Image 1: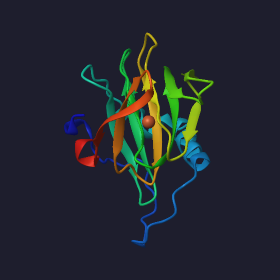
Image 2 (image 1 turned 180 degrees about the vertical axis):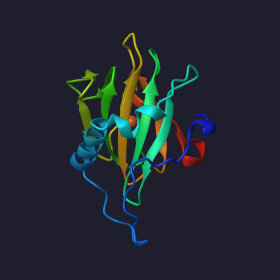
Image 3 (image 1 turned 45 degrees about the vertical axis):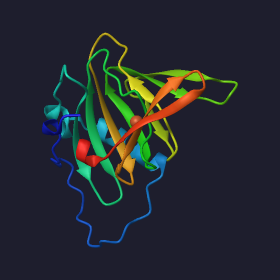
Image 4 (image 1 turned 90 degrees about the vertical axis):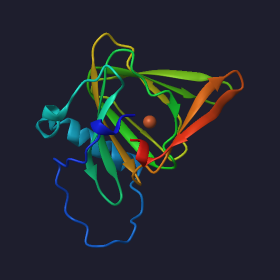
Amino acid sequence: MSLDLVSETSTHTPETSTTERARAPLTPNSLRSIVRELAEQPEQWIHLVRLSTEERWYQRLVAEDDHEVWLISWLPGQSTGFHDHGGSRGAFTVALGELEELSLGGPEQGLLIRRVPVGTARAFGPEYVHDVRNTASGPAVTLHAYSPPLSSMAHYDLRAGGLVRTSEEGPEQW
Ligand SMILES: [Fe+2]
């Protein structure tokens, strides 16, 4: 991930927290509401969107004690690979375009592949692992919320026996 694409511009001006105390994490449903509401206000973020042929482009829109929100763009073929969220809960919604999400179900379900069309939101708990990709023919723009803010992210390979953890990255890499 290239650092020069990340800035902490906040267009969504939350009230300043007056306490240093760590707050309880938001629920996946609350995070889903946050990304849905923001997706309905494109004037807050549409002018920030960039596209990068190198990799997915992303920018943090909100950095609060208890959650953060990221804006991400995806050209056709760009994907995350299987990853977790370091114990954070999360949600994302597709504001433009369409994505596909892969996750592992139970032993009888195997690999689950979901279309995530524009207007759809997905929310997940702290143990969730998925691979998100743009398999469509045009670009996609998504909004993602995490609580607590992401502190690490591990990557996995899907092998015959299941998901195998291959690497981990921290905030210094994004
Ligand atoms: Fe993710």
